[in-house]
Amino acid sequence: MTTKVQRQCAIVSLVVELEVTSQPGLIELLASEGIEATQATVSRDLDDIGAVKVRVASGNTVYAIPEF
Amino acid sequence: MTTKVQRQCAIVSLVVELEVTSQPGLIELLASEGIEATQATVSRDLDDIGAVKVRVASGNTVYAIPEF
DNA sequence: ACTGAATACTAATTCAAT
DNA sequence: ATTGAATTAGTATTCAGT
Image (tube, rainbow over all chains, first blue to last red):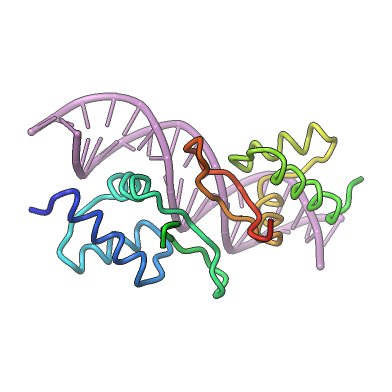
């Protein structure tokens, strides 16, 4: 079983390293690391983390963490 | 009748001056200036302008224009 | 307190009309 | 090329369960 902090850390890593464009997408990425979570949870996590969606050069919007 | 540029300029002004939190909200603000538009149009306008949603101190997310 | 299912809300896109 | 209506996609919140 994975804890909340572990999951949120994983999310931070993923968001920083990859171009995460949606919560469903993020859920898949987490799953591929063996972390199960639903959209509701991921939404709350992103909120906790303070992630925002920003427009990137490629044109689409990706999640980012202001501090980085 | 209002033109596209007029409407987009109005949107920029509103976004810069006020805390616009949603497209429905923006539509109302435009309406109060006598500018009619639907959600589809406002969505495209925000895209043209390059507006993004950012988290502000108050906690909620508002539209902002990166250049400012 | 944390989570998921379901729901409400918000935003983007499609499709047709002008 | 621009727009609105309707649709689809995406996100936040509520509500109940643990």
